[in-house]
Image (cartoon, rainbow, N blue to C red; front, side, top):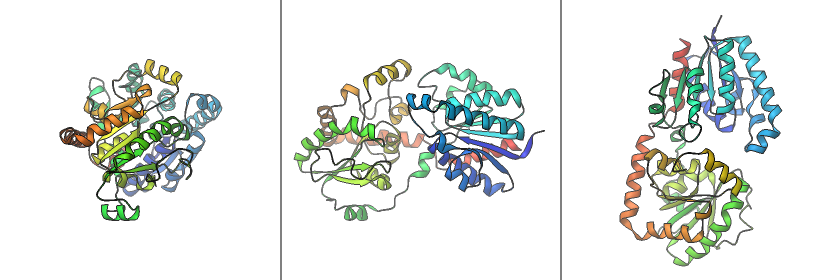
Length: 379
């Protein structure tokens, strides 16, 4: 017999823990009596999750680390599956962590066919391995998608697929007004701010900062630009000391990332979440990324999309230039920057195109909409 007063929520990494905590918070406001168990981290537990396994044990990146942590993943899988089968919850909400979750969903459906399974964040079948859609529609009852074009992909299949909006919209908060920001960091209001988001991991800094250093030393000769490097909270304070940067470059911690992006004229950013932030702030950007050659070759074989940055993918065309691998040079960065600085028409077109992408991202409240989906399936 299914327990209507019990649900499970599982998240496999830190970002999923944050998304899960927001969903739990909204469920608790409406149905405080519901017991919520599952896999989560600090934030989900703070909001009322009873953990049967901790997300922190699963928070690693990369192929080699996956092999290294194989037994941890296996233990987590067995633990959560056993608990779900024993407890027979009415609903299981699975957040991101796609490979782990599709295997878990399959086992749950075999043992508990009446348990409803909801997936928050669709697997990126539009980027690679599109055949996964067959398993997705077979084992999930509901998909809560965060990208506007995803429901169309599933429209021909018998699955409840809903666009809930992108959760990043809820993170867009400005703590310092422009005047406060430039005063706090001694920024000249007569200069154009160009900000650089080189990455949040040490290996990304190593791959990117050599080129960025050359770029900064060349571009700082102009005299009409204020340069800011945004340092991720994951990185030590002195991570940029080894690079030959002009003394005028300001390094500002990522707690001010939204202010930095909002008040910049141009953003140079590593491919990833930051590219979507530039769409939310509607700031023209230049996207870059460099990995080791073997990883790049493997990615080219697997990934089947034309663009790698989300604003371009959502728009279905190039808005922001992408300098990937061998194209990521100081010369190309300078060329793309000067194109924006010296051509007002191009700059304004980019801004208007990003505004359209921003509109497509939906409204704030993704976590609330996912919570509503969970409550619908309970009832």
